[in-house]
Length: 434
Image (cartoon, rainbow, N blue to C red; front, side, top):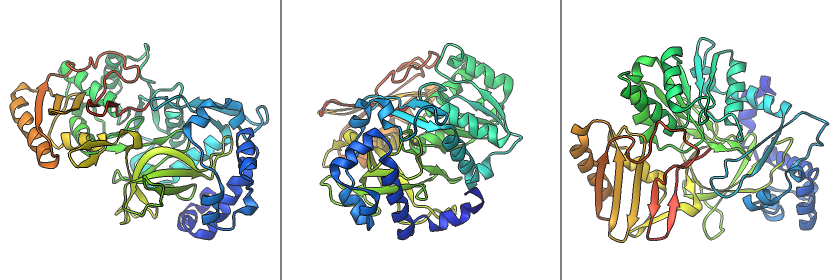
């Protein structure tokens, strides 16, 4: 398969190829108790799928609640004991922990495939020292990153952050002593380490980090740019859902849909099919899953597939993940997602760890952390101007020292603070992942 990878990319979106993969996925899903029951009730098998339209109309949707409430073993299409199985689960930040199963062979094939991608070939070399600060337990983030780097032959510094062995100050100390060239961490954690280093009089740029690979939580483009400038490094975002797999980043920090192993449907709020270039709810079928098949999974994400191809040259659709459909915010006569507000906030050079945006009937109240007090008045005015020019609302801004909203030196269990609070609609959205 890997030898033929360029050809696989070219064939990825051809209808006859996609249809063949979908039929196979439906037949394979019958092997699990969960889908045997679901598909039998719908009266559909792979042979009934004569077109992509048939697949969309005949195969029932799968939602998160169903997976959370299922016996984890009922989701398996592989008998325990027949192959080495690895269990993990989602972080549960959006309602219950979804069980995740992969076989050892499946995981290794995925790692091999990842290393075929131009982004890893261009940005990762055996001379690199990679500090991995993703959680190694519960989710696959730390373990899969570890395996990718093992296969690439780099020097690995496993920290598995957010535990007593590697609290933030220990991580910062290790960064000084071990001088990694690549930092793998959630953006919030990377901001925390940078502020701890600065507290100690150490310029994060002096560490020698050339690349920050952020995962486990969304990070707006402008916020990623600010983080990159703090370390003097390139910023790259890896984002996806453990239950279906992730999008593919390129060296331009653009996410691509891996359509050679993933079929994506787009729907508007009213259930009608959406067009390319629209904000749309995504429904995904990963066609490569071995241990735990998934058919027409309602991700809960609102995405936008771009009309134009990426300048990186990768022949795969590009997309933006805007947020969960339940977190859409109404401001004036328009709607926004929290990550769009985050992107607007970081059009400035804010460099603290945390921020909070409150939507109230009286207007929008923003608190944001920043290190240099001499910048506070200027930043407050810039943030206010940026928000009021974009949004139909009165805006008040207060800039505060790092650590005011949350102590970045403490172990972060998950969601210490809501970043966007909609007091009007009673919504609280934390741009957090694992």
